[in-house]
Amino acid sequence: MDEIIERYEYKYLIPERLITAIRGTVRTTSKLDKYADANGRYRIRSLYFDTDRYDLYWANERKQWDRFKLRARMYPGAEKSPVFLEVKRRVKDVIIKTRAAVPASTWREVLAGKSEALSTLSPSARAGVQRFLAPYHRHHTNPVVLVEYEREAYISELENYARLTFDRMISVQSKTRLELDADPRRWRLIDHPVQTRTQEPVTVLELKFERRPPAWMSAMVKRLELVRYSFSKYCYGVTAELTLPGSRCTLAR
Image 1 (cartoon, helix red, strand yellow):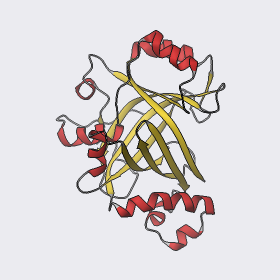
Image 2: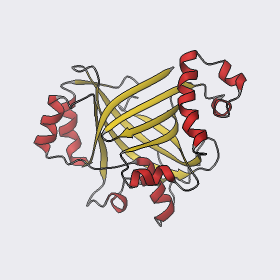
Image 3: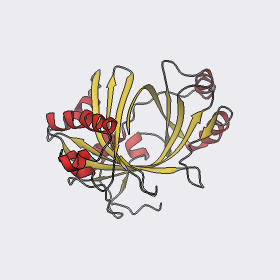
Image 4: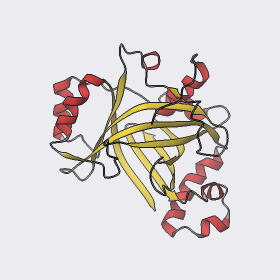
């Protein structure tokens, strides 16, 4: 499978007390993501790649108009989850994301460009893999960090494409090997007041849409006086790993 998605993403850091009001609004227009568990959530784990000089990190920190991230993503707990090789590019305010699903058993061989692994993919999936491999090799990238979090996602039933997501329990650990396995004792939470500079714990709210925000999203943002906030899970994770003191933790999932 190969996907190309072009959209806008607006992010907000919201206190927990606002979630009930936002959830009440989104449920009038949208349905819960079909991949959610009994609690209405699912987990996402991504391995991010960067250069030895952290060029992709610094491009984001400097807010370059044209920048991108590379990641390998899987869904812990999902039965037979493939690995998705994703390029997330930002051009000014537009997000262009491409991703290719490859078998979890051969994703390393796919990254290495081994013909045996590539030959098992569909033509569409191979095209998506090549879109990943081009910047992966051109910039000589390597694994940097694992990022994992819980997502509660809603899909609009009114628009062709509109999504609202809550991301919580965002955690990170360094990873320099080509693997998606995590050490449960080494997670570090990054959505906390030290990192976000807020007075209380927050949740990352993301509004995703084509061209312009739906009327119900705009009305909700205005009514609740939400303020957009730049929050890159990858960049916050790198900053936390390199600069924050404090002990690791074992997360209850």
